[in-house]
Length: 274
Image 1 (tube, rainbow, N blue to C red):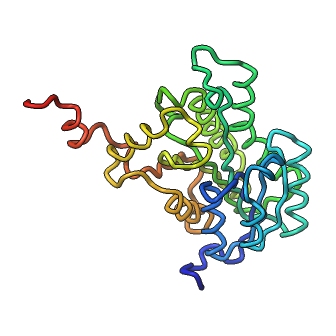
Image 2 (cartoon, rainbow, N blue to C red):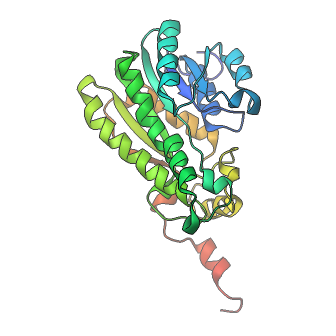
Image 3 (cartoon, rainbow, N blue to C red):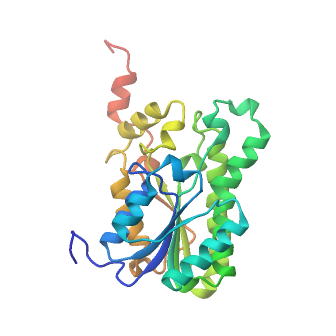
């Protein structure tokens, strides 16, 4: 296998939702999947045509590109029908979709605009349910396939500036478990990767992101996991090596999720002279 790959996804076909630009985790996942021999379609919302550079990634990886709003049933149904026609039945789906509308518009959690809140939940969580539903409804998903969604530990713990996105990710992880119990009949597995704070376009829309990133860096024994390492981890979950792993939230965070405090943070918080 050229370009440093090991052929882990040779012969696999899939669809990757959510790549926007080179900062996107989904972009890194697409590059890693391509390196490992996969063929795949790319998809994002039509608005990404003018915001991102997805066409470049499609050309680089030789991938068909299907524009689809993941909150619209007709768009997803068409995307899966088109992907199946272009590639055949799919062996994997990557869900890397998320947006906190109140967070982006600087509305505090105590004063949420509920219309925006519903939109956040729809985009960031319910879209996973819709994607799996339409993959099944179009008969586009092969037996033994793997579905991976990207999450954050804000689903499990309260991070003050993560706000409504914590609620959305909590629902996302619940959808993973609830679908997983049903998909297992066809040996289809579904998991969430709980990733470190990562410098993406979406992540940097969060007020206080730099502080969250620095806190993660100081608390994690290995430091924050970057997009490239997340992509490599995702490849393992798309491969046959993890065929018996399902319904899990898997922490890819340099050890952050198991830590309480570090000597470095104790020192930083200890008044001088003590």
